[in-house]
Length: 313
Image 1 (cartoon, rainbow, N blue to C red):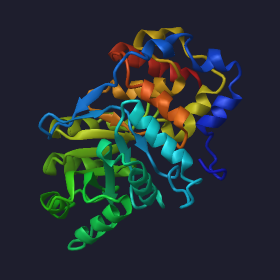
Image 2: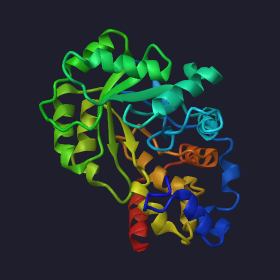
Image 3: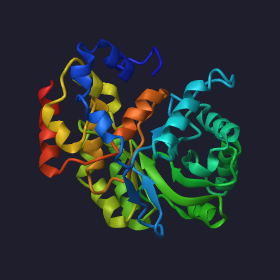
Image 4: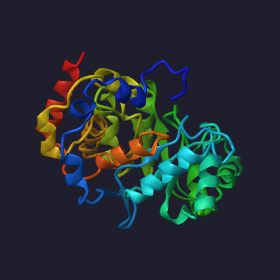
């Protein structure tokens, strides 16, 4: 996060938490996770293709300069993602220079074949979808993205024909829609039911569960893979966790940190395919990946997790 952001960053929470080992880690559990493979989930509309359940978001954190030194940390994040069994990178043209930075990293490292790129159309004006998509492809340094989504849909009558045409032309492999605004959930639900896109990206967190009511069930019924943005509650969750110990019962579902606690809660929802927390720090990427290993909480444990977070105030 930039210094102007008011929300407490994860790094700040880590620095300020007293008793770091006791507050953020369950002793010995990180090592125990080492032999567990990354969990994967099917892309429902695909034929046998799966996605690792933890990816990375790039809003703000990958909006850096062209200097190689500026791109050191994003490059380390991408390497950590892939080394830890992940593949999904989520981005958008509206994320500043993020697409260009990703394209540069993947070109310089030769890692494009190992990455699942999800990006977005921002304007999606009829007749101009191809031009907008090709601009993204140019910035990303690739001739095809894996998922192309309409960003922040608002109109329940949104026509998906132009986006689907891009898929038919081979510019993307999957199509989808996104929203991170509660006021637009109804539009997203309607589109899911009518158009049955391949993907839905939506905000969802242990302290932001409104999507559970109708949107996630609609995605499940439509067979849409669900990517979860803002899984840390827009930063407030780490503020709540500041200085608070993880309860010892989180070891029952292989949880080693607060970050994993928040992510495992989401991943245990049956509609969710993957989480895409944003970070520009390799150590946070590695910790996030731990949420995709080992056991996930069951329904009773999820209820206990919710109650515990609510008790933090």
